[in-house]
Image (cartoon, rainbow, N blue to C red; front, side, top):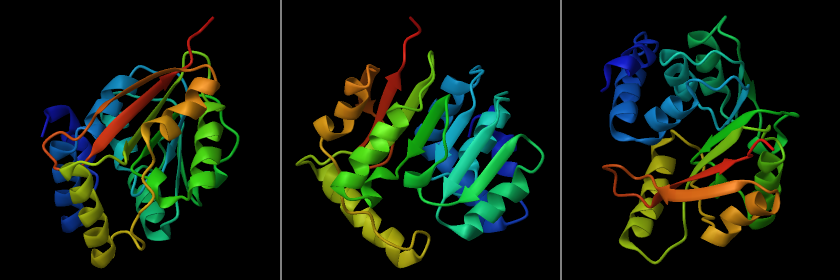
Length: 215
């Protein structure tokens, strides 16, 4: 694990299992360190949808990100953890669906959440995110694309195992196509880039980056 992120994992050292989970997540999942590094100098407030226990926010603070962070997640216990480990650091973690995030203008991050929503909800959520990106701001959306690959099959198996473990109550099942993902951001006038983001994992993960260019 990179030295700059050690302090992020150490925030959870009170809970042994969460501490080692955090270390593993940061070391093996490229999304958290990638987003943290890309947003470290952003002056804009951040909306973190599906924030869980606040690990992304902890990574951001570890690299010097200082703007306000609002996080939303449906898991009350994880929200309590996030508010505990990041108390007093311009953070506000709330229980609620990503669909219901409050009015926002800045950056938005949503990692591995979209597949929990049905088609119409996905489009409504993506359009809402696109409309919340401030001039110069960026949205990062990590997700699994629906593609006929072995990685996609492995992702579906992983979702079922996660549901069985109880870490996330319900397995996600509705994986979008590339056009379904990109279209709301393109229609909103954002510059869109999509690239693989699976790192050493066997999962069919991609990262969408949508930027609103300052005119």
